[in-house]
Length: 209
Image (tube, rainbow, N blue to C red; front, side):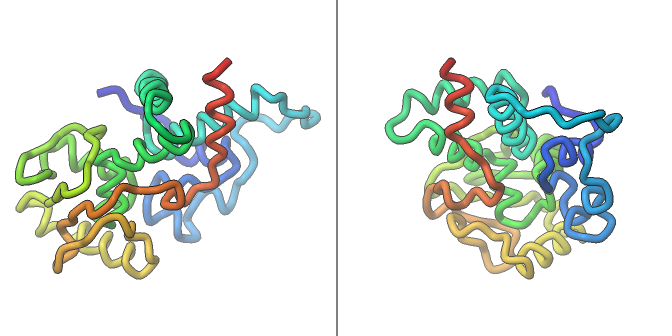
């Protein structure tokens, strides 16, 4: 499975926005973005006006980095979104929200989507009592997500759940179990569930050229 392995904080600085790629660290004073908001690299002699293509590209890169998706699968998501009924941009974001790694993040078990992908790829996650090790697996209404026995006793999980509950980060399209270590998908996510400012219509314009 291909994945990005570069410095995560540089991605936030490039986009000029906190993408919460490093979980709880992003919510503390240790976050690099709080100290250095300028884009990585040497400062330009003058700030050129961004072209229309540059704005479209930055918006696409932002969404890819938030959800941890590379170019080819992201393009496949877009092409599938165009074949569905409704607004293409919203369909794209909803499909990304339905990914299993994002679902773990939304239920508060993982502090970041990268951590959620680590849990999944190591075989610690079950969907409807079947082990799933594919982070891009799309959940549907009625699916139940549970943790493996080793993960349930992990102190990191308990800390993640506590922080997510206190910060109100639990998604309303999932119903948590009593211990917070399992969840059932009760409805499909909607556009309003995306908490990062995204102009999805700009991405549609970029791919429609």
